[in-house]
Amino acid sequence: MLVINKINPLKAKIGALKRKGLTIGFVPTMGALHEGHLSLMRRAGRETDIVVVSIFVNPMQFGPKEDYKRYPRPVQQDLHLCRSAGVDIVFSPSDKEIYPFTARPFRTSPQASDTLTRTFVDMYKLTETMCGKSRPGHFRGVLTVVNKLFNIVEPDIAYFGQKDYQQALVIKQMVTDLNMDVQVKVMPIVREKDGLAMSSRNKYLTPAERQEAICLYRALLKATELICSSRRPVSAVKIIGAMKGIINSVRHSRIDYIAVVDPQTLEPIKTITYRQVLIALAVYIGKTRLIDNFLICK
Amino acid sequence: MLVINKINPLKAKIGALKRKGLTIGFVPTMGALHEGHLSLMRRAGRETDIVVVSIFVNPMQFGPKEDYKRYPRPVQQDLHLCRSAGVDIVFSPSDKEIYPFTARPFRTSPQASDTLTRTFVDMYKLTETMCGKSRPGHFRGVLTVVNKLFNIVEPDIAYFGQKDYQQALVIKQMVTDLNMDVQVKVMPIVREKDGLAMSSRNKYLTPAERQEAICLYRALLKATELICSSRRPVSAVKIIGAMKGIINSVRHSRIDYIAVVDPQTLEPIKTITYRQVLIALAVYIGKTRLIDNFLICK
Image (cartoon, rainbow over all chains, first blue to last red):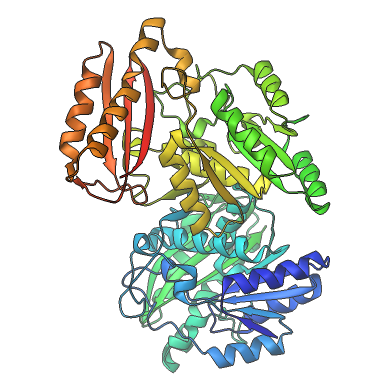
């Protein structure tokens, strides 16, 4: 497994592989890898010739009061996991390599986007709701760095997890709108035994909070039950009410949002009839913000 | 010369040429071609194997009160000029091909950006001054369409005219910031015999206005004379004052802006010493907005 820190040698290596006719599968990550990431890497390994993983904690997608500084960075463990998942190339650039524009060191002070880069990629509507509403500028940071990474890696297929449903959706939309030459695949959420969606941020939870964190999954199960067991259309108000009941019964929980929306437009659905519906939520357990979702086809 | 209207056949054709090892030179235009455009095409022909010209009047870069609807579209004449300049492929897409997102017909009503596309590319600082200040959203439209066209055409070298200095600068910045794999070359302004910078919008001028329009060039000559004849630093105030005098002596002129700025950052320069300086201006002659600039190395 090659570990490359700089853009130019990475491009040279990938260029040589592509000229041999090999296909490139790409899994962009922020490290702190878990089974969710590894499932993407293994899938890439089955579908493409060369698997490239990027590990980069992207400062541009964190808000000034968010967890950029304390985000876990277990470098050696991540490299070990990549090796075990059959990854061919790990791209692990410095902040400066991705954002050469800035002069200041990143980890000592959170940075405003406009000090990291001049150019940005953003999106109307789809970024303005759900996580985009709670985290202003977040998707601008995501879209900009993913755009850059796609241009650097030039993958045939890129893999994202469904846990970050809105992220995957806006990336697919960007690829379509900007005529980018990459196929985006979204893979199922990988869960712990008790149903908690795997996330690098689960590491922040105390043992007590870790127990409480399953309320997101339980709320989603309850919503599914209400939708699937009813023969008549169910109102979003009823679903959200039931989910709130479950989450609020947990001591250290605070709901950021619960969304019952169209899976393509993310526009609210008032009554669930026969269409697909996305139930997504973000909940603070203590100081840790967790997200989860179910895509339900009635 | 091939004329292609659709993205997929264009990509197939260019892909086949690239696999043969041929290099692609690209000249993006809005049509209404003049000697300025042709000079870019001929330069591309000398430097690359295949010359691709796009002709697309981009609705996203026009403001709601601007000249999108009446912008000249002399299709047959443009194709004839491309042929005479040795162009290999003309890409002339419909509005719908570039902005499939929208449902409404474009020419009947000017469109807000967010009805044309979800994703957009924009830039901090460099787009907020000069033409960006006079034309809010203009560079968002330019950057988005050029990003799309670069992804569609995948050129080795793209050619732009220096008349749109700020446009060329922001496109170069985008290519750097987003790690795009294209070299951007900026070519000198081509002028009429009397000094007027060639522009598709010169066609809007009445014969009287056409005479008056040389005031932009005369003002730039005057600025150059002031800067180059003085042994001591010259203040921007003095230069701008002299330029205003020349332009305001013309009957149908109205100054939009005169900028004395750093050619890289576009930040105002108060006193011209030994650095490079960009003198740029936008002036209405009647209802027609014209721009011009000199890059001066003292």
